[in-house]
Length: 533
Image (cartoon, rainbow, N blue to C red; front, top):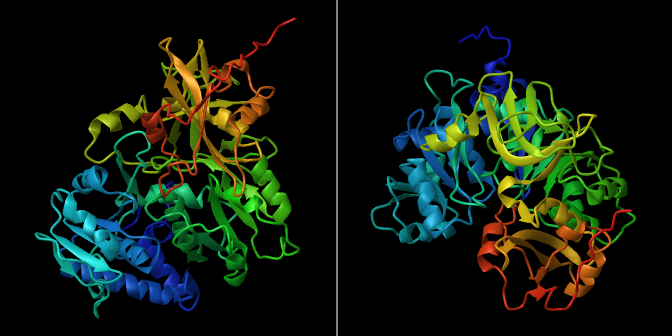
């Protein structure tokens, strides 16, 4: 099938089955995927395994366009499930491995899936929920107890002797996968993602990667942070090292042993690596580039210490990396600039563009069809609300400067309003984490006796450190505007997070002011307002 629109790349450059066939024909013996135990799959083997997985799914009744759940940690089976489904033109629907109870029930029902590929250690959680349309499960990782009403199939069902693929070529505008949003502020939404979105999100955004790279993928494959790099390396003909999760200890040994040249760090990963003891081997490694979010002093310091080019950007499940940076951007706090092929604006409540320096909502559109999400599955209200006036509304507060740099301010839902001032929780957290004893922090609003928000900071200590709340407050006093200073400080061992390393602020808000929370006013500390003149 030929497409005459020049905005649409060749199918072999953007659709997973065609990319697999192209790379297997060009370089059959080159390694594509490496796993934690050192096993390697060449492109030829990856294609054969994907075709066999497709045959296994077809034998269980999976057809083109069907949704199939994948409830697995990073590894062989997760990759096989994804590529095997795409070989048939079916839709890969990965699920967060932390889900259980009501949240698990929600995504299972929302998916409309009849089949799930599930790890044996997770299988038991399915017994406790309404499984909606689920009738069959391929169980990997060992045996699991039987569940009435759910037919279990062994892991071997993923690799029968025969091979299969879609009868007609899979097209770039079909859904490659459904990714559920992180669910940090409410029920997860099921985002329909075409192949062209993955192409725009990765190949056009991470311009510094090429066929010579090997990317360490330790962000989960139920999140775009993981899928991006698996996809872009398939496109380029490079390779990936797939690990189940991020580990600070041994990180650089893994990089050296497997000749990793690039990776992505989010949240606390960067400061964790920065806090490793200095070594005379800090620059003895093949790593060339790291994508890190957010971009701050720690990011800059990590690049300088380890001799790596650092990049940053802004992305969401629903969009396609519209803002990216050059190597080592000088403006701390930036997400970068809008990339070619996308248009971004910062607007007010009426979608009118605001001037530089003024905070508004970031909205996005692209010049290529299907380069962003195709809507929220079974949620037309959310789709219509996001896609207003021909633009996708991110729900994120941003500002930009005269040079075209964009700066993330906050999730609009996370903004704190106190004494008539809008406070960015992101900016509060950035200052708090500069305190040496703080490993990570979350700023949240809590109700005051005056029917407005008070600022509360929840902090977790660095290894071997303790946090004195009053000492932390005194550190913040000269660094922050008076209205941003927290009234409440709570110290916890760890902040609650999703497996994608996003802090679950909804849980912290539910906890509210606990008995162990330090209260500035009860401590008798008064905040001085800044004098003018």
